[in-house]
Image (tube, rainbow, N blue to C red; front, top):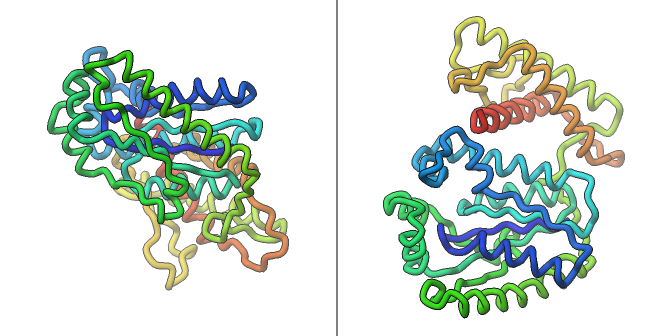
Length: 327
């Protein structure tokens, strides 16, 4: 189940390419199933969305909202990759994906699930993107320029940006719309041949390495360790809220002296953690582990209570961001 990440400047034609690519894939391989994770659709579900402006304008003007948007895109991508789907399914993430560290996170997610990943970079020039943005009236110039400045161009020498496909909108897209669309369709058609050959028909098997495989105990105590650690984390969070603290930290006895900085849970972000919501989050976390944990019967490395608590705290932070974004 290959994962294809779009990236490029705003208004570089990513969504147009995705639409054409999905159609070409179905034409070449009628049995191929396409699942698109759309940044625009996710942003439209946010309360900041209005009928007069693109909801991404407000989101890109607020660093916290943008962080929540990325968290929701990642969450939906993970769900798409973990679902029970045929091997000829292709998951496409139609978003800016301009941060190389974020692309690396999604690369690790795909690799841990034994899926291939590729980058599709829309290389449309900055001047053309700016002209299209002006014609569409999508982003104010300040927002457009800020997103462009933050864009980190993919590099095929980096394993998380490889394989790297590139496509550029025809320069006459606005002046000769019909001819330009035909030219773009021809470019996407050629790209489809490469994707089918290199991602679906190559027979390449992805093997997760140590950095992308979750550490798991080799015996039946694994889930017991996780269950006890998460229960203690929940108790610490409820106690911190009762005491009016701004952050909840891990119980001190769980962290060894040389463990370094452990994550905290922000209790001031407007999301109310109750005993009920924490218990529900724990069930989701344990279900995720059961569904995705790799059997490491041959390893001697064990999960410690500290590792289990840290991962659960990260899970809660991600859930808080995702839920706040959609509320």
